[in-house]
Image (spheres, rainbow, N blue to C red):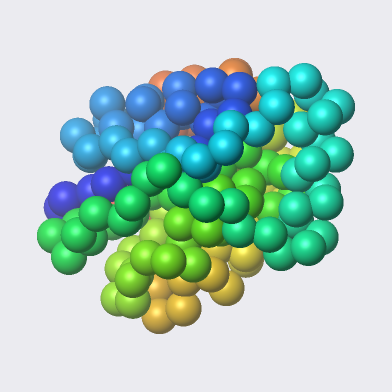
Length: 155
């Protein structure tokens, strides 16, 4: 099975999780990058994220969607921002042709769990099979956690 791990990471936690998934699966990595980086200050980015999510804002991206035809499984990673995927992830999913794909969402969070990220990704990816998600608190990702999740979704 050929897989691609697509992710957006603001603080580096989601990137570390994506890299661990790639290591465990042998999948390729692709970071979703907005044209304009988000502020590093926590309060500023939290407030900006809330405004963008409420407005349905989709930022311009540096990352272009590759040809996804050869991939069987797409891992989609995001920080949990107000219980939702970060706007760069939503922007990427809005523009990508994903019909018929299997989607495995994963997120990092600061206490909000997975929120409604799986539901939101499903709404952004009509015609896909959205598998159970993995939610990891901050940077506390354990290899055993990832392996257990992978065994559940790849069964």
